[in-house]
Amino acid sequence: MSTVLQVDDLTVRHGGLVALDEVSLTVEEGQIVGLIGPNGAGKTTFIDTLTGFTAPERGHITFDGSSFAERAPHERSRAGLVRTFQSLELFDDLTVRDNLLVAAHTPSLWSTITDVFWPKTHDSTETHCILELLDLLAVADRLPTELSNGQRHVVALGRALVSSPKLLLLDEPAAGLDPSETAALAEMLRRLPGIGTTVLVVDHDMSLIMSVCDEVHVLDFGRVVASGAPHEVRNDPTVIAAYLGRQGESEGVEA
Image 1: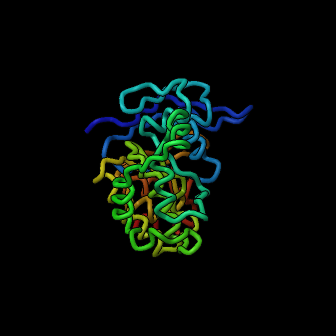
Image 2 (image 1 turned 180 degrees about the horizontal axis):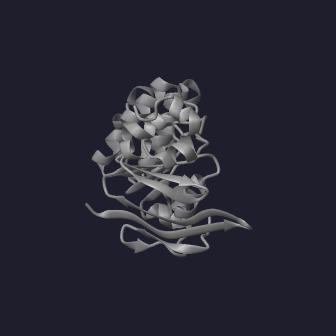
Image 3 (image 1 turned 90 degrees about the horizontal axis):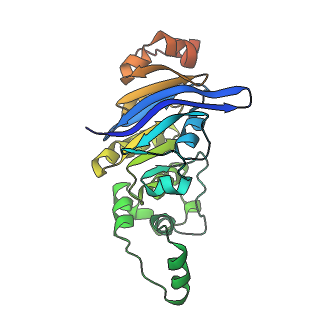
């Protein structure tokens, strides 16, 4: 098993606020890794820094064996590090299929100019495969506005997958989903290592994290306070105190 992502001593400051404090973690190929923590713990800042939207004060990011220092967000994406955002931002006037087709191609300036005069037909094989993988073929020709909230989340997932990312960063993919929709999303995520996509998922939904992840890291005040298999993290007193608190104890964190 090879290392897809290696993060060492990543530190981010916003003025006097330390958003990330010497964060180090590793993501191995074929894993689904969870990142959890209370609001303000630094989870989205971590994703923003990995993808180049936030500059670290210090630290090192190695992706697929290469340093990401000074690389722009679009260069990181083209290298295979792809993210989703908390807001879905689907194109509601395009069909589900076209939403994926738009994301499947990253044209150069020259190809954009030539397409104006000599329009080309792009290969949609990958798009069809992702629609099939995510059980979206039945709604492929419908608009996102015609879909359920859960289906819209799956479309957003599909749009991230059509570029064949090596590592997919999911920022709260279960936000707003009911338990049945979350269970369906979990089933989709379990399929991704089978197509060569490693996953790092940030979410507050403990049922999702504990059911799909091979390893879980816990952030609190910008620091990693616990790491391990889901059952180890779930029973860690530091995690219960920092993230779940009394609510977690009353709901049976150890179950």
